[in-house]
Amino acid sequence: MTAAANASRTAVGPLVIDGLCAGYGDTQVLWDVSLHVEPGEVVALIGSNGAGKSSLLGAVSGVVKTWSGTVRYGERSLTGLEPDRIVVAGVLQVPQGRRLFGSLSVEDNLRMGAYLRNDREVDADLERMLTLLPRLRERYDYLAGRLSGGEQQQVAIARALMARPQLLLIDEMSLGLAPVLVDQLVELLARINATGVSILIVEQDVQTALEVSSRAYVLETGRITLSGPSAQLLDDPQVKKAYLGV
Ligand SMILES: Nc1ncnc2c1ncn2[C@@H]1O[C@H](COP(=O)(O)OP(=O)(O)O)[C@@H](O)[C@H]1O
Ligand SMILES: [Mg+2]
Image (cartoon, rainbow, N blue to C red):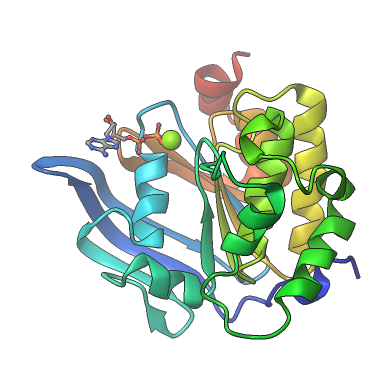
């Protein structure tokens, strides 16, 4: 198995979102959203800018308040839990825009990912990250803010892995990156997934999202309008017309 194997935990159960409604202030942005991610699965959530994809991930990771409906992970309810508790439960978000600590080094950013851990294997996991992502070893002492977009995305993913997640929520991984870098990240996701980590990926790059996932959901103005095997959605006339420009 790859170097990430021991730096992650195998999913204990499915993520099940049921009838989720959420919004900001008085404005509702998610309407009765239900979806699930089984242990070991890579699932994509696709949709246009403003559809509510980030809000949905935020509702799972506890940074967007749930109005009604439930979020469960395995036996646990995540609904209404503080973000820190959700991290401890094994669910980690890689936020849109990477949100690194730009004035901290790569090393310190990675160590921040482990801030809720109290085991003695953090240094060993750091070493595993640098084996998984050799580029980060070369950049270890650099300020994160000085890295290229592709390198920053690697740091963001590695920082999330430092929390030893079972389920990764990845928001717009490919945004602003050249295709060759996106391909490298896609390959990285496959290696992470091979260690047993489930992945829910949110993308405006529908082609990439449907290629890396086995199942997908389409979110339109806060509602799931279509779902199914990714290969099937790639061939769906509606998806082709709306998202693939063919
Ligand atoms: N912090 C916020 N406060 C108020 N409205 C927000 C906030 N974040 C997102 N929204 C609104 O919620 C809707 C969904 O946004 P978002 O979840 O970011 O969509 P997506 O990630 O699919 O582009 C949009 O109308 C957006 O303007
Ligand atoms: Mg978004």
